[in-house]
Image 1 (cartoon, rainbow, N blue to C red):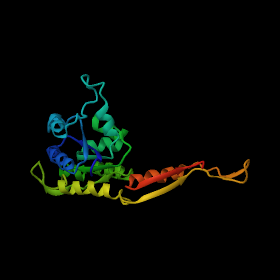
Image 2 (image 1 turned 60 degrees about the vertical axis):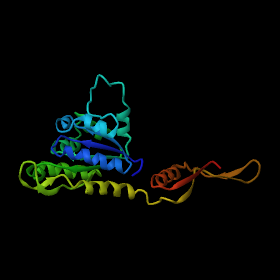
Image 3 (image 1 turned 60 degrees about the horizontal axis):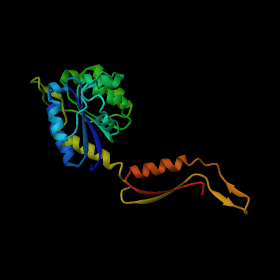
Image 4 (image 1 turned 135 degrees about the horizontal axis):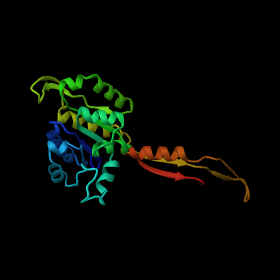
Length: 236
């Protein structure tokens, strides 16, 4: 995952402390990680903890008078290759599913154009709640991928589904996500795009009205999937 940009979004649940170790694991894989926190996530783990470990500012306030002019970390998050929400509480799922934007995390989700993965963590009763299930189905229908929680002992001293997935499982899912988009690694691909001109004589030629859009799109996808791309663009 070298140089892959990941926006790690942390919501306000007891499992937030596990996001600290997840950050370290992602960085060990040489990913570039930008931390984003929901409004109350700092009640469980301070933004300073993530800032020290990631060596980057943490996006956790919508209105920060001290750094209001500095939008670099927000742009980094919006332009990430993947948004990973871990842990995701029932509240965060509800906001994401219903287009609410009242904190840094939910604002980023609405602005984010790339792939999103969610690792939920919550009380068993919340996990089984019909409203939560409906919100999950909404998000799945929009292409959001889920890393299902595990069965086990929960913070409320009950046992059942709702515990954050094992961090190794989350890491493997993230690695698999990036691997599937690099199946052209090591290939050199030539793409031609746009109209061609075939001269009949010094005055006349045969051409076509191709816009080249399809060729450009193919070249972009091939590059994104790891290929070395040579693009020849018309008119030629």
